[in-house]
Amino acid sequence: MSGMISATVTVCAGALICSLLSAFVPEGTTKKTVALVIGAFMVCCLISPVTKAISSIKIDTNIIAEEENKISTSDEAYANLVIKQAEQNLEQSLTDLLEQNGIKISECKIVLAKAQTDSIIIGDISIYISKDYKNQNDKIGSLVFKSFGAYPRITFI
Image (cartoon, rainbow, N blue to C red; front, side, top):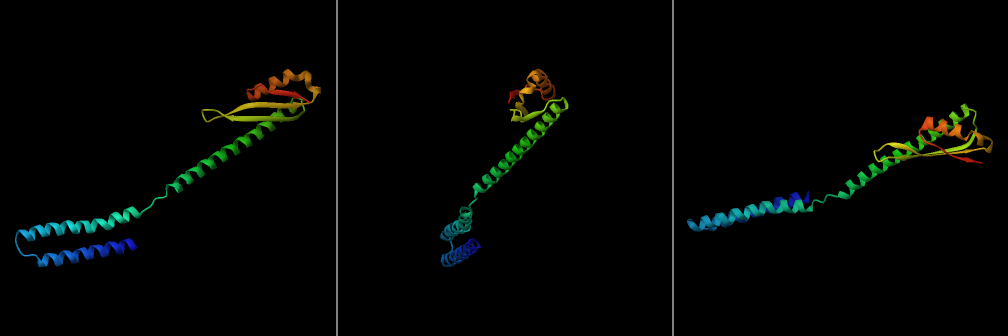
């Protein structure tokens, strides 16, 4: 608002000065020259407040960058949450699959990884199982490979 007042005062003062000067100048070539100078002065009086107003405008680009960062951070957090939930679901599916085939496991861990094509792949399957099932090692491996497409690391405890 103060910029608007400043612009108005500058234009009014410039117009007053120009009209006083043109009133005291005699007719002829001098009057034409003075009119040209006064016109240039009036243009400067009009442009000056506008340039001051434009230079006083500050755009804070940090806010925009910060918002983009928040968006990407929340997208990454959501993607990680989806991966964690998928790992838990796959671990439960693996436990159920092996129990249906008469194999009781102590624990299993499935690690998912992001592929370069923005897809999720199974990075690692670890199964912790009792030594009683050592003779079924091949059966466990083939069951897991058929269902998940990856061979597990079986650790007997």
